[in-house]
Amino acid sequence: MTAFPLSRETLGGFVPAVITPFTPAGEIMEDAFADIVGRLIGIGARGIAVAGDNGESWALNAAERARLTTIALDVAKGRVPVMTGCTAPSAAGSVAYARAAAEAGADGLLMMPQTYVLKASSVELLRRFEAVAKAVPLPIVAYNSPRRTGGIELSLDDLDRITNVAPIIGIKESHRDFFHHSHLLHRFRDRLAIMVGPCHFIFPGLALGAAGFIATGPELLGADAARIMAVAKEAPGPELASLHHKLTVAYQALMGTGTWPSSLKGALSLMGWPAGVPRDPVLPLDEAALDALRRRLAEVGLPHA
Image 1 (cartoon, rainbow, N blue to C red):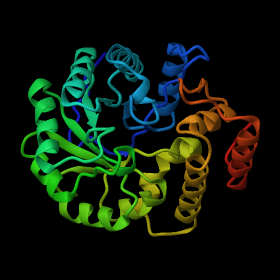
Image 2: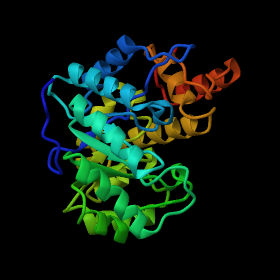
Image 3: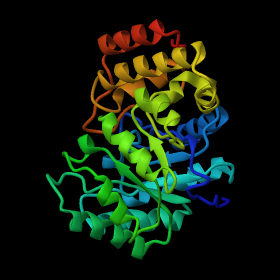
Image 4: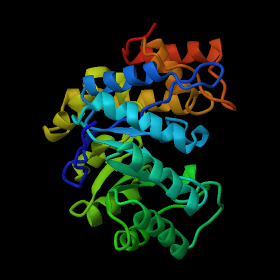
């Protein structure tokens, strides 16, 4: 394993949140996971996010996060950074996950506000990030996704305060309001690596100064996922419009099918990836849902079985 210096300057481009393939019995398919990480790097990923939403972080304990981190690092071999999700309902839980990731050699942490809590004050948010920062000396990518945290969001002022107590080098912004993205980019693009979440916001976000994207769906485009950054820097044209449409359709199909992340695993399986099945309590897509997903992929010319 070779450390990759994760910083605002090095975080950017296509950074997929990798799935965790499970057997029907709920065991991690380690060889399949290594294969998937290798495939993602092979199609141009500039970083790997382990134990995020796509990785079914809610079903992973500290030891499993550490093991997945180790495997990802072994595959990456210092070519790209590996960050590990450390979100838990409590600060102590996040610290435990962060320590496990650090001991496994993670290059950084991915962390959102407290999950399963209905609200949080600015002080509570601040103390959470501060506790992890004091316990583990790794750069942190904040993660803002109000729909994943019961409505808790990192406001721009919250983010500003958190940067004073924790080594925040970037943010995965998954807010569904582009007004929020616009103000975030205007205020922080010169201070943090802004990584866009929703697929249909990727090109507008890049045009406004985002550093890249940690999103669900670009991996379905194969090698075209790595072209997004280059295309975004060119004058708008047919290729940009085509890629934007593919991202939008793929994202809508994934988000509108099954219980997350069964649709992403289903789509990757249709494309020949060893995606395994979700872990309990999430069930794989049934045949009707798979057929519907197959039709949506076909609409935009994405390969599938």
